Length: 252
Image (cartoon, rainbow, N blue to C red; front, side, top):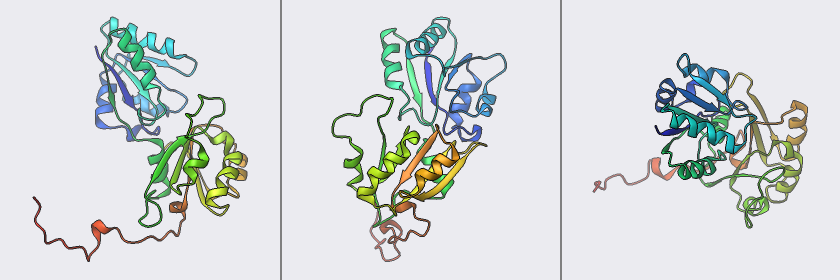
């Protein structure tokens, strides 16, 4: 049987893809990240499914669950928070599955930064304001960042930053980023986007740390930084939809 890595999205049960729901409905075993998912997500699973919460499991124990399910001929889903392409450890798990000769595939999900932007009603790329988004994290009690991927280097571009796994370092990060963006730069923090316990904070690099600490946020939050997040942001009109653009040319 193929092991299916499935993006669970930001946590809401109705933000899974149709494919993800079908895979959950047909699964005999679901290995999931309980820290980040709303319980309602698991309502898509059929009665009698074996549920394995990975909160207290290391990568080898998680892999053992997947390999054992495959060996038993069971349909297994590895449910990842957000989208598997970001901070999901899919690479490490897939490498281990390859070593065991276990086939696998990936079903994408709604990433946390996109869910956060949706909650805010924000477009992260506004013409002539910002046209790039940097998805990154910082190093605390985590894997070292590669050389050249410093926060200061990314900030120097002026791109919209989407910071993952960084909420406990908000004060230090805000001070570091203010050197490039200015203390008045808009910031938004969204925790548990799309879930009943959702928290939304809006402010600037100068005051966001006070808000985060007052709210007691410790995990499952995305920090968005950049001028595109200003509630009154005004950019130019998109060329694609500009009324003055010549649309007479035939498509080849």
